[in-house]
Length: 293
Image (tube, rainbow, N blue to C red; front, top):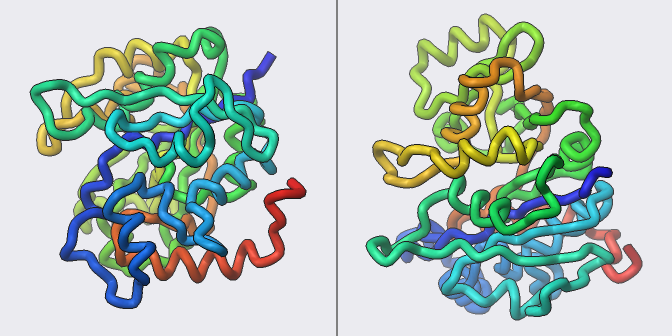
């Protein structure tokens, strides 16, 4: 039986959000305080200062998930203080539990997204022999994208976003890692800092530039060892989820199916994102009633 579980990665220290050079002077003091002190997902960008994570969980609920594991940082209690500190907590009928991503004594920040996911799966016995969805806490994925990951027949899958669907500035979009797929839509590679020549090659081959926004469906038995043994990124010195996934598909070709989607994915990375995200939520969730969902 499917666990209908999604793991939400919220254990980072939000260094870019807390960077004082990214202050937007039109952001009010309460939101700036949230941005400087809380997890990015807990910034009150919604109506009545409703936190960003509420909106992601709202879409998660509408998509059919039942269980949510939120990976939290050891030094940030803002998520537990809001959703509850019990072993199992209820929000919109979702069962919320937590996994903590600890910071090693020789580091000042966590080990990365692969380590964050491993922090969850290694303590979640119910996921063994099962599949789950994993996503970021600072991106707002659509109901369509979340539903597709929950219901696809493939053991491993991802949303392969057409970057022309994003509403970000070109400079930002061009920094996103791109995907390479085979003729049947299975993932071959995720490439960081692609050259202009490679971009042209990808467009000629696929007709669009595919981008990963870190939403995947993964099979516990297949990904576990790759999360446990993933190497550090050469430049960032972190264990990153795309690296673990690339290692998995290298060993098991055609094991991760991609699904093309063309839509915007709101992103709350730095303070300059606060105003655009507020405007998006005001427009897209104007008629949403959280209490009756």
